[in-house]
Image (cartoon, rainbow, N blue to C red; front, side, top):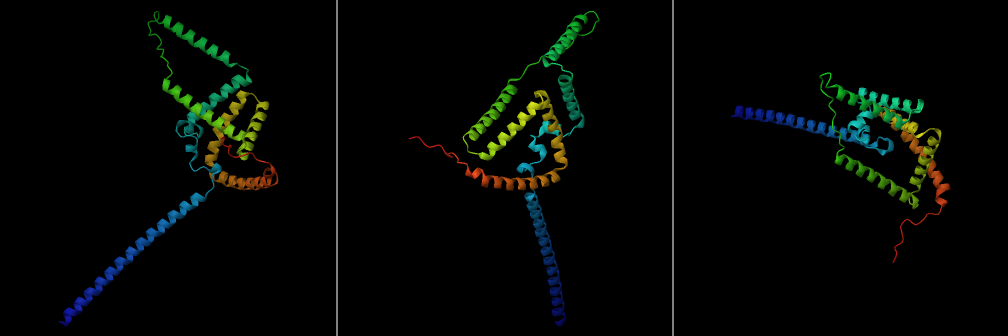
Length: 255
């Protein structure tokens, strides 16, 4: 009997040790999962604290609208992007440097194309070759409607913004718009419209891809610049803007 009691006690102690080990492993796994959750939450908090230029929370590709236009500006396909850049440069050189006119170029292109097609169609019966296959070109109605709707939406939003600025409700936006228009007037006095469009095209082709490449450095510099600008704006607001009498924020109701 005594031996049986000893064997049972030994078995119970062994089972207790096994259960203790199992519980210890479970605690370790739970603690490791808790530590992983803490690390992920800390990483998310660090990412949330990172300053992004203009307060964006999306990648550059999404900010540019995504799809093929964003791929074009970010040089996802270098062959296509390089071809478009070469074409735009050739057009600028043709019209700006060589003083070629747009209407003259269009007329010459149409004359050359129609002459080639006309001669080819008439000569095909003599040289025993098939006439040229001229595709039928039609502009889809839904494309025109979508473009018109998008243009209408943007114009209405611009008019609403100008109306809000004219009513004196947003001084900061007023100063930004005035500064932007002044910069455009200076650029317009230095170059013509075609050169200005080419400059804008080159900016769109170089700035986004460079910003995507050096994103962290540019954002850090932008954060410091915004802090300094806010300091100067607070001083300017305290000394000058706060002393300017402001108009009513809300229209008075007419009874």
